[in-house]
Image 1 (cartoon, one colour):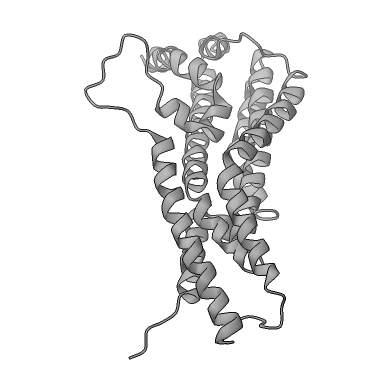
Image 2: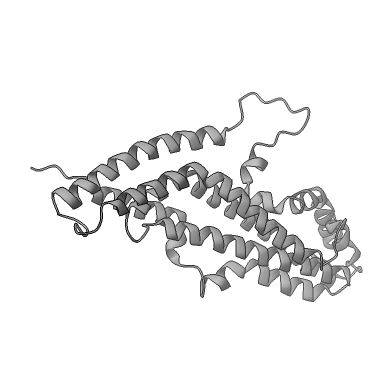
Length: 278
């Protein structure tokens, strides 16, 4: 009964696995496409979320805030001489503002180009691992040879794959929040050290690198499963799940967290704005 129950569980995951694995990059880098996707024939009682409108609202408020911070920083540095290096050429502050404006306007196009490069790099790797048109649930079922050991092992591998899916969705939501908040992060370019913008950029790059590694390991795990090497597939899938933690020890700074980055931005702007006298 236990074997039959696990077999039914694996068979029931077929549509989810096959549909999700075909859109892994969208789950991470363009998760709004998945959130806004409406199957044909579906009737919605409420309008779907317009992330472009949300970004436009953030962009407008960030533009006003950029102007306020620019004026406040110029006054405190060059007139009140209370902050920064007042001997520095004021043109540097203007250049920082121009950089912020360019990033705020062009970031979505730059981001799309960057994701395209990551996709080409990933496809070049995955072409070496030939697992096209593979039914994942069927591949797991084929490795069940009637014994309880292989059934449980296939269930463990399926759980690892589901954990990877959850990781990709969480990364996608984090990147979505960071992309929407990029106008606020670009205000940090008014500072000579770039503020939190450098941490933002590092987070995007490291997420892309992590996803490439995880998807490559995931495909290797599937390939080993197709060759009836179930234990190897489980080990590789576990490594794929732990990839962010492994890379975090050596390459990802804690400040890359989007909430922490936005907190740094808020503290920077609060320090720039003039304080009232009591």
